[in-house]
Amino acid sequence: MRRLPKTHQDPINPAVTTWQQALQEPTLGESEIHVWRAPLNVSEETLQLFAECLAPDEETRAARFHFDQHRNYFVAGRGWLRTIISSYLKTTPVTLHFSYSSYGKPSLDEGTIRLRFNVAHSGEFALYAFALGRDIGVDIELINPEFASEEIAKQFFSANEVTALLEFPASERPHAFFDCWTRKEAFIKAQGMGLSLPLDQFEVSLKHDEPALLRTNWDLTEAPRWSLMNIAVATEYAAALAVPAGAYCLKHFHIDEASLLI
Image (cartoon, rainbow, N blue to C red):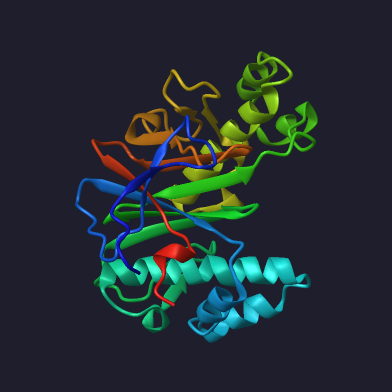
């Protein structure tokens, strides 16, 4: 990657957030959380570059996709992940080795490295969150009004969350639904428990002016130990980040093909 020194107002949703362009050698401080946004729709040249970096297990996973677009998005997602991590570790993308928990959460195979990360993708975007020595979770969802129904909410949300959802005007309900969904998914991913932790066993707020994590059924002291925050990715997307509670400097980076030396 080469450094693009300017920060740029997000061209997709300029009124919401500012993302910094990718840095050649980013430095992650102890009190920092970095979130990266990357496009999954890339050129054939970049896709080939990414494909050459994949490990055999990643190649096998890519080959299982029936549709070309899904396969290409997977390859791009893994390519960006390898590119970003290698920029932190000052190594090359192809040399990275990942291991996976019993719930499928990836981590670096090298046990001495303190870099922790989490990955999410939906639609045409991927998000990557990074921290040192602490677990984090990130989620992104393309807002689908047809999915954001009261019936689906009753299947996965707590009774209080369903009530809060129905208080929103109909036009705002899909976004509120996915604000709730991404907050819950980010928290589960930070816990590293996958879907073994039912979504209705803890409650989050659907509003932006109150603590995002309200209560957990298994431990009433758990909620204050976590911070949940929204991430403004693009119009028609909802996203959230979960980190252990504390004072963090949150930085957003945008990486795209202009940031690569090909």
